[in-house]
Image 1 (cartoon, rainbow, N blue to C red):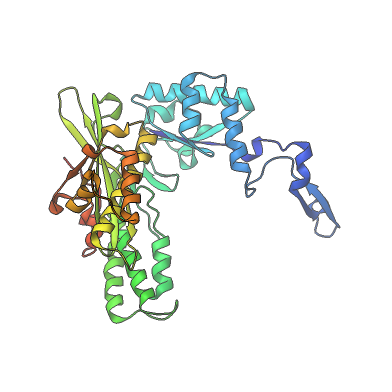
Image 2: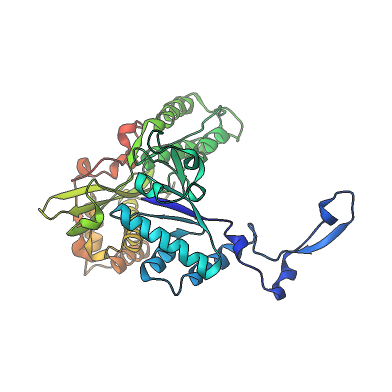
Amino acid sequence: MYVTDVEQMFYRFRVSTKHRDFLRFFWYSENNPDKDLTEYRMCVHVFGNSASPAVATYGLRKAVQTADEDVKQFVQRDFYVDDALTSRPTSREAIELLKKTQTALKKGGNIRLHKVASNDLQVLGAFPPEDLGGELKSLDFGTDVLPTQRSLGLVWDLKKDHFVFSVQLGEKPVTRRGVLSMINSIYDPLGFIAPITITGKILLREAISSGLDWDVPLSTDHVTKWQEWRESVEKLQTISIPRMFTQFSYSLATGVSVSIYSDASEKAIASVSYLNLTDSEGCVHSGFLLGKAKLAPMKGHSIPRLELCAAVLSTEIAEIVSVQLDIPLSEMIFYTDSKVVLGYIYNKTRRFYTYVSNRVERILNVTRTEQWRYVSTNKNPADLATRCSSVSLDSVWIKDVS
């Protein structure tokens, strides 16, 4: 796997002369505070302008419109604004694609691709030091240990090829504001630790419901929960999550499917997905894909309705996975431990209240009834996030499910 970055991406695209009046600003003549203010106009797109990301992304794709198909696919699908992240089965393929992309962008738009980082020494060694990212420029790949690398907000340990968590807690006040600050300090876009982060959100909701102001100390009961949760957050730095979905390569699989589990309680709803890869010998390799956990509405919802909301969350995850990994929705199996939800989905005669019928329709617009199956609660991994009785590291979604 490797990541790379476009150098000063927004500045690579000039603003049309007729549009420059919309990017006017005042500054001192010759950058001297002792001189008069002068009106200037931006000639290139700048960070902070709402249109800049869209313009730059369009320009980036335009620059490779005559390039090879694999380069176009890389730019169109694996870039997030100026950051690119992708993986290839072999070092040779990775090097070839990246060098072709560098050439195409340079030729098509005078755009420089740099800050290359990879867990593969062959990939790093194929590029000059000035094209490498951060600390990699000065490393001796023969003796030095590869450092960690930030990639789209995640911390990636290049040596182990694992994702790790770097949580800067500091001293947080034992108040609503302190709880919110700690929740916001955790970045977990894939939901690796959603069962732990949802516990903090539940604690914050309870503190709000108790009527405490933002800077008033929490009650004794909430302080105990806070301390338990803080300890679990501190231990996140001991977690190391393999970057690969499974130890078996996705590109070499003869069969691909996805299992998605959902669950709900009076406090939270959750859904978690696992990738299942079949090798040439028929063995199945499973690994975590994506998880989500949300607070349940505070009033007016029965457990069956919340379980139905969790099932809808499963379909949302399915759509994300289908788009990002090109896995057909028909290759996904959905599991719930609620027989009421299965009754809703399999029903063909009874009419339901609007709330239920709308959500059943949402589910059946994405899936078929035969894709939904029952799983007992003790075998449902989504139960880890809705149980809300434990905040230990044993309750994270990073274990394989077979």
